[in-house]
Length: 139
Image (cartoon, rainbow, N blue to C red; front, side, top):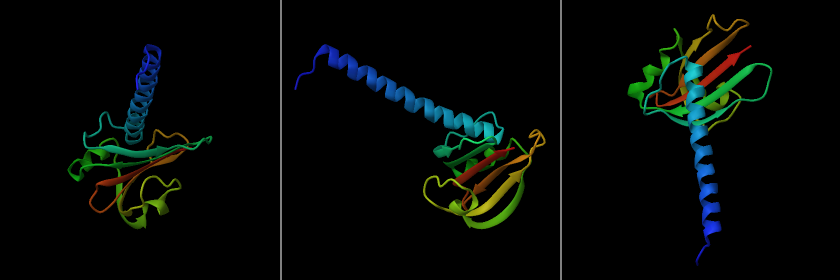
């Protein structure tokens, strides 16, 4: 099957737009995660499973990521978190169900003073610290 020049140009433009949108969303999720954690950079091993942010008057953002457990501590550099043990699943600790459900073993939580009207950042992880759920709430 032979395609004409116009069809080739149209297919090329559509492909370029789709790739650009994909790259923007992947970049955008990483920027969102940097914002949630208050860090300047993210580890190379971090891959975004997904992020959700419902439209409300408050800021609510939830993301799930995979990370090499060796690099997990770099996620905690933006705030002074308090640690606590947790025995729940990712679907039980927050509203949005992102990715596959996994067991939560650790919670790192902080209520940043910069959140004038209240709020928190919560970093949940599985036992190995390779699956991470990020939860941001700003009132």
